[in-house]
Image (cartoon, rainbow, N blue to C red):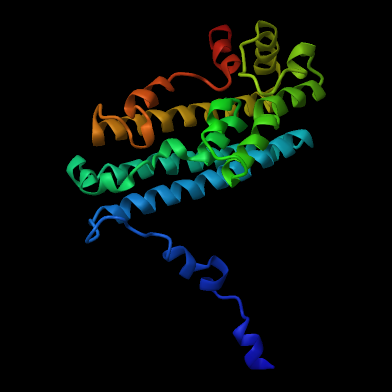
Length: 267
């Protein structure tokens, strides 16, 4: 009986499934090329962080729906900390020179970060949705099913607006009933409400600031990602049919929550 319990005891390795985890880094280059392992590890770690951020964003939405503002703010701080780690990881990737990347790049075939469904899920959860992004994935696949669900789900911004309404703020009815698949558009009426929040409501102005942190953190990640790609492949087309740095640069400077930026000159 004792031996049987020992056979089924939870260990560090079994709990984290370390053997399975360490078997996932499979280089395609011959040799293999030294730097391919770094490339694989970094991108697998990014996918794990995307999974965690999605987990935390869903939690923020539930907390706002439950009017637990303090815990929502704490969770937003956690997301920001993860984003900072993700940006710092680009420093590691940039230790790989263009020639070192070229040594195995052709082995990637059509594989591209452009195909990360979890990053697209993250964009959807933050309000930047696109049917084109969904259509890049095969019908019935895990990725497409997840994106279709995110497409119809409410966003963090929608959860925040409804939270403000429950806090007693008068928001335009059209905003509270907006099409959550559409992009977030600036609203002068909402901006006046937000100005009042900042001037008179310290608790909720802090939540606003954490959303600004989140928005800025995503923009920082995008910018550093562009510079890493430019440093590594220059103006070459990306793998997987993307235009490389050109496409990535086109995504810069677009705030997720424009109203929170537009009120700065009014405070």
